[in-house]
Image 1 (cartoon, one colour):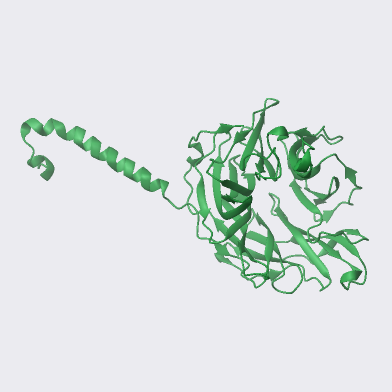
Image 2 (tube, rainbow, N blue to C red):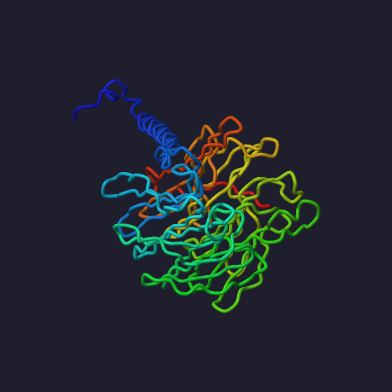
Amino acid sequence: MKQSPALRHVPDGSRNLWLPAAVVLLLIGLVTSLAQAEETIYWRPAVNLSNLAGRSFQATIARDPATGDLFVAWTDDGVTEWEEIMGRRWDRAAQAWLPVENLSQSEEWQRDGGPVLIFDHQGHGLLIWTRTYSTSQGAPTSGHDVLWRAWDGGGWSPEAVLYHGDSYLPGSPGTFGLVPVETPASILLFITWDNGYRTADYQDGAWTEVAPWTYLDVSLVQVIVGETGILHAAAFGENSSQWGYNRYFYDAYYLTYDGMNWSEPLNLSFTEGVANNVDMAFDRQGRLHFLWSDPDSSYSDESLKSAIWERVYENEIWTPNTEVTAHNPDQAINGFSLTADVTGTLHLAWSEGFMDDGAHTELDIYYRTGGGTTWGTEEPVFASDADSRYPLVRAGGGNAYLVWQEVLPKPPPQLPEQEIYFSQEAGVPPDRYWTHLPLVSK
């Protein structure tokens, strides 16, 4: 048998050393490959979806499970001088983003905002937003509305009014909070205002009558459905400390609805922090993950560390507060978004930068997944030359998708330019969320 050149020049007495040497070389190659894998880019280059002259903000995203198309909508004053709802669609068949479309076509005296997008598993899609107008701004009457359009697979239905109020509400656009919830039988919409809410159901192409106002001790932020049909809600409520400036900060609360009554709101952040953002999702084992962020404000003696905190509900017990993000010096967590895909894998995206004299600066976008018991390695999504804020993550078709607001400062007195950016995963290792990282309890 012909010997390899490597063995031909090895003395007979030394040939038994070749196997260990080969093993060492193999291990070195494996380590090198793993190191290179750690540097793999899992996210595609970010795309500016708005790219308009004015401000683009309040982005929302949804995926049509029937076609794989992506829909993004946002509030924009770059086409006209007043706020309207703009949107774009990723056409999966064409593998391209279609041009920006004006989805609200409002009058000059109308202010639109706060859009939300949702598709159910059958591919029924809804775009819902708010509109306010006032006689002081040239409108024939004053009022506030909730409007909607439905996607039929080829286009959007004409806009229609779901709810109308006769008075102007300040703080527009986006005065109402809109919280859509996919249930097994319908899409349930919560229309929130401070501590009150109204609901309506969308089923078989039509809405039910909007229910009367219901008032709680907290303000609903997120609502999801559990396996038994019970509604689980995350909310902002009164801070546990009312001393000094603490009373101006929120705590994160949890409550449930059994179809008849709401449970008593449970304060999950309590005295160990305040809540600036809150979200929740069920993992594949049915455990509820409740997350909130703390801004580390210098005005609150309860806000001691900027981080994303988590508590998990399992077997009727809440775990202690656990830090989800790896702490960095002068860390600033500006906002985050959490969702679960159909497999129960958790997807978390957040905006993180540095604390500079109490302000959050140099904000970039990060992402990680979770299997329910551990969180995977932090993945940088976008390193901004400005500030990346308010990420929103959605998952479907084996991928995660992200939109966020990019804030580009301009010299005073000009307002900062704001654009809507998008990115999606480029490659997904199937076991990446099993990477174990030490977690810090609070």
